[in-house]
Image 1 (tube, each protein chain N blue to C red):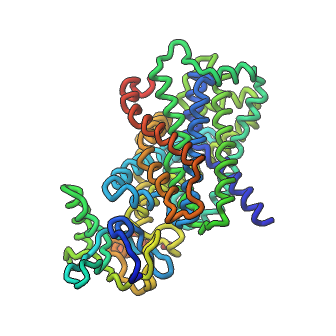
Image 2: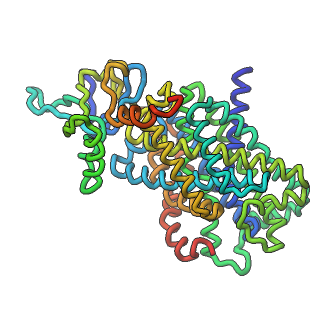
Image 3: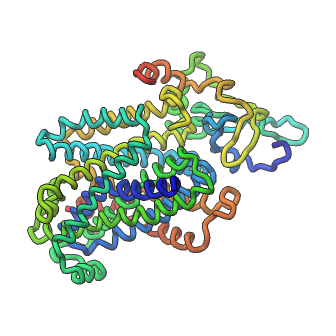
Length: 410
Length: 124
């Protein structure tokens, strides 16, 4: 019974944890601008993260090693260093966006400018990673993040023409007045938002921290196969709400508050309150995850002590130093009054461009029978995973040219 | 350990080193090979830490990685941190040592940061 509860908790956390500011903003921006014509990109990205997160969890359970540890072993010291810097930079951008997201949620509730909240949010985030029992916080924020399910209820209330919407989503065409390059650029953004590398860094490091073993493979599968797709359902409903309400009004989403307009229309104040709580929890949880991921990548590349292996922070002083520097850098970047929506858009697109260096080593090691024994990849996961590797390499090649050609989706 | 056949480049280099109770020591950043053994060259020691790592890069990156490490050395010497191969108890996904954490000298950067920065924050 206790085991069951634990599994349920994991799944619920995965649902709430899947959606962060990247999914939130990108889905809404795209919904308002392109309707449901890019819904497929969320589905493609979600299947991709499901396949690779499952592998990274399985590798962590059997070898007790997290993703970045594996990256260095399989890519070699130089390529892994290149990956370390690109992953760290993207992580920092994502952290900036998440911190700003938390601050904006508080601004929307209090009407006090978000820039004033950024330092306070930063301090609280740091206190959580410094001293508080982390699992409790992770579960609490995962559960509160479920408030974002309000988007599904709102969609229901808005009473869309379901079959028309499904038809639109399954026969994607580029809307009039939009260019093909821009459409593809946003497809990459949605793909990147779903497959952000920090998710596997964090997921696999968590598995190592919780000392997963063979018996936890079922928990791994349930978290990933049930939790992530349900999380993606939230992203899809944000997109659909945005397409229904903001699209016809030609609203160009440039502020987080606009994402909540459909909720206000369908459900009124209580709905908006639930959305704010969900958005706050999702971005706060993601701030913790991205911050820790910044530390994990460095510690796992250099072989430092990280996480619970140190009973006191000073025993992992290098790891803690990276956390502090990263948090200050992200806070400073947010305080330059840089547009959080723009930072989010850049971070998801750049994530997409950097995927192969992280996902290729996971695939290689999940096939290593010396490590994985009978739990190595079967032909089925290998077919899908290899297909995705081809996709992410293609995405990497076209992202930067597309970004330049479309002036980042203008 | 003695009769295991290992491909040093693939199965030792870049692996995580852990103490007997599972604490991280560092990565196998380089290897010290003894060429004078009668049966052919043998691995004499694992080298770990930034000085050993820096030597594996080329150009400015190498200088940069090594010089940070060098500055933190009290003695200022350039010898990498060395773990005798006899300390190793098993080589698998992780290279495990026979000794506990307390028996090894701490890494330079860890010790420096613990004393001058992280250790000064309340609750550390």
